[in-house]
Amino acid sequence: MIRAVLAALFLGTPVWAVECVELDHAGTAFTVCEVDATSEDLRLFLRDGDGAPYGHFGAIDAALADAGQQLVFAMNAGMYHADRRPVGHYVENGQEEMRVVSSDGPGNFGLLPNGVFCITDESARVIETLAYLDRAPACRDATQSGPMLVIDGALHPRFLVDSTSRYIRNGVGTSADGRTAYFAISNSAVTFHDFGTLFRDVLKVPNALYFDGRVSRLYAPGIDRRDAGFAMGPIVGVVTAR
Image (cartoon, rainbow, N blue to C red):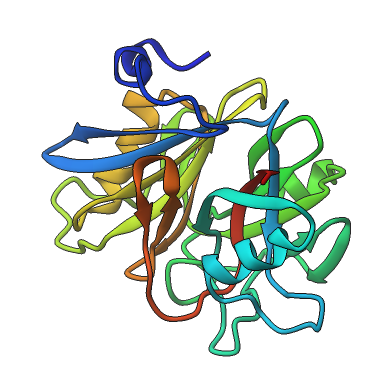
């Protein structure tokens, strides 16, 4: 069930496989999309049948059309190199393309703790990287990014209330039972602190993961949103029959 604080916002929205609403938090507008991981076809996408990166939401939707399917929600899902290879761990349909990276390093990805978004046929969970290595969960799809926004109910320790670093940012948080994933994107520039507290205090998820900033984009035809731009790397999406 959607969190009580969001119930009134989602009530009355059109019936789609994925429900998206706009809300305000800490002076910033966000778009939040809720996915039932137990019933929706939630997947990761990186390469087409020829091994070339999809890069764009439209390319995925066009490929799905050949199978009588369609993309009803999508978001960029993790950092990538110039050739669009994933920076961190990446698994798609059981096939690993990139190993887990557990060391610290420069940039947001290396701002430990970072984490992994793990998808199975019946659940979706954000798991801190060292815990992921310890548990070795059987993820059908997985993408690693960083930093973690919320770790076991606590905000990332490096986030500053008075930070001057502001970008459009996107990420994902998951419910404690793994049934629900909340994907959020800021509609204007936001600090890590305010983005993290959206997940902790409004969506009230125990764990949340940052996907990226500046390149953040959303595909949500249910609210007539189809962000365009340069080619992306890993993408997360929900598929239904066309």
